[in-house]
Length: 457
Image (cartoon, rainbow, N blue to C red; front, side, top):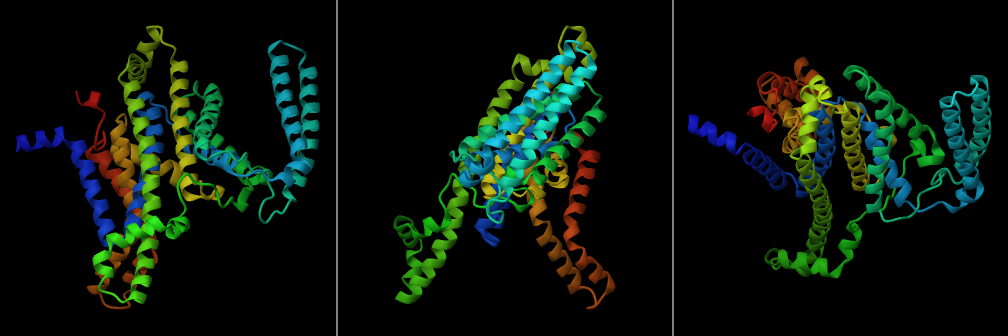
């Protein structure tokens, strides 16, 4: 028995990922390959996001609950970089909006400089107020003009029309810039205050995105975002793709009449096109996740990584040895947030639509934290495993709940009040599953499925 336990502990990561892979194969064979690949791709994106949070919490003990704000900045970057510019909106209000933003930035910088140099406070306040009024005048006029340009379709400035892959880099940089600014203010706070501050600032970011229509259309959403992979329609019309599908299903098609072959081949091509596109996304996401894991592990095992963990384990001792605690925390906070920003950009690219109202704490904070805790904080592979498990359960909770209701219905009298009660609330089972999993992990395996290796020694 001890030998079996030792073998399991030595190969826990391989076995865990193998089991998860078998489960996804089961879904593909019994439900659909498009669904299985959809779960797989969303798990990869969630894993990248969980990796960013794990770097902050597992490496440095920083409790960031503003994840959705950084993910939203990544999504905004896709719109601003990849979408085509709306020339009419730029013509009527683009220069005024640019001028207002420049005046606003100059006002803020001037106010900070005057305050630091000890200039009279009334003079400083007057400069800031006058600058604000001028900024507001140009800003309001420009926003109104821009939002009137065909609001049903555009009503915003659009983007730069650059290939969407560049938006992933910009998304990471935007999240990193916001994290640096937030970190300079909040990283000196206590852990609980840091959590409240990051949550509040992320809500401010979302408020701006939802209400400034000239920026990214606000609540009207942005559709038809460019993608880095082929479109399903193009694949269906591609002759080489049709020939491959016809060759794969040659034995089945030979048994049908010519008209039936055409209809059946069309069905096969449509299904295969969806799977092919999702596989293209899978390749991109695997490459990005793999690069982040390799870089994170190299950083973790370097002297810099050991210093960060030493600060996490005992700040007082690290400070006594001359380590700059706040600077190290700022570095980790920026790096982790940048990775979350990249994941946010990948998510919007994959969906092909930017929906500000979709950024909810349940999806972009609670679930990500459960992934990190379940997989094992401080362990990069653990975060990836947690992402796969939690996202699979999140998606499959509905079908599993319906199956439970069906089994209960077979053993209960029709019209039972209890059965109707369960049927009406079957969609809430995903929340029950998440809470139950979190409680079980915290009770029986506080370190997660794949705990941090150093903690096992």
